[in-house]
Image (cartoon, rainbow, N blue to C red; front, side):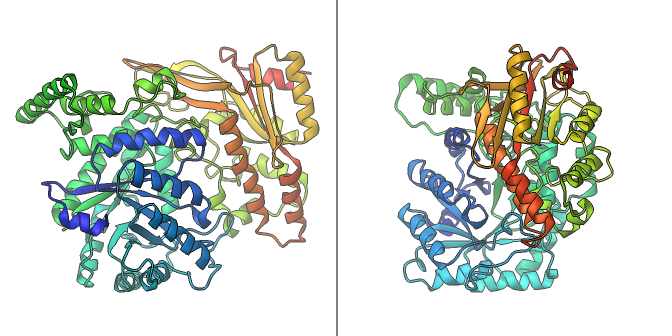
Length: 619
């Protein structure tokens, strides 16, 4: 069904809401996203949207996911479609595939520049802007009347900042006049700016539904990274509030819920906005808590005539009614693990109707907390089984490789130049590298002498963590998760080196590892060498907290390593693309891509702080 028809038919005392999902990086992440979508579908969104990677790099998984949400889960789906690296044949192919799946809603976007490119360049002159996509769909006999078309808008200005606000409003009006049916905005955190912008849009004569894009803050890292990526302006007070609690992941999540609730209440009161669009990051708990706090959800439908279920749900719904009568406190101020009568009714219903099959490969803890087991990713790795894998932590620095950052890194023409670059980063002489978008972490400084020693050897380090044995979870350097807990870490280090070095490492692990050391080594050609069993999973970060099961936030295993390996080696090529084909810099970077290995070494004895480094450096 078309989104605009659903909006017209919508009859509820509260505004509608939609959920945005993206295709996960790994197969296991994709599999685990599906039951999450099923659970979130029971929250009754008006529609769900599925993103489209730049240049169609997630084309197959985007279409697969969109087909499942539309056909299997019966959620009216909005498929994002971009112009990046798209030509007429590819556009037609995507639109026909969407139509065959029964998808009637398209979000037409220009898209971001392809990876490794500083500026956006069209490969087909017919598709240079979202306006071109809208015009094309509306002029095509097979698609014109079938699709409901949405377009994006930027309350704080487009991230490229190429034109002023008045020009952007005129461009938005052009997209509307070309046949757009609804507008979804870029995410923002400044409701004052949104309200001011919204009024200007209405004054421009644009009367279409405007759906504000909102992303509850999930983690400090993802908040900083995504606001930088989208160009969102964060109010000083919000930034100050988040900075003050950035070392307590649970408080950050709680604050994200409170802020989203406050923003939604104000926006829906002071404008004619009739619904909101949640950028979920493939996570569910925070969005559910926002909706509960707003009192937009409370009861789940009874689907099967099972007497035991009916009695149970009746009891729980009566509790929910009593809750409303006695005015239970809103959930934005409660700990995330708190069970309210309203949420209990939801959990019971969803649990009865959406029990995962017993053969699903999920850990016991994950099965018991399926909505929140991956709420606390720690660093880039997280867990490759998570639908949000790779999004909440820093995965390289592709988006920041440009002429400005390259000028800071110099123009390396030799292996010694690369070693000098990585050492400058470790000495804090530069704030970024192609593999890190932020200054060196305080946690890394705990093992800085070892990282420098490795780098001087020509093993360029790109990831690491020290061993930690039961430090307070509120520790400002290595702490994470809620307070009243203890965190643990196994030491690991990750670096690029030669095949000869890999041979030496393999021999040393076999002769002196004594079962304590695991490693992965892979190159851009597809070779992968390891002493970890195929089904082995190395939990390298975990925590124990009051009233909760043990939480494992960082897991290194074959699939996660290979997913990161692909990303890591692509960075070398992205960097090389900024130099002339025959230049010494390009030849050097391409040679590193072709010849070096990415290696990860883990030492499992977390009780001995220097165990990993003693193993590596001792003869």
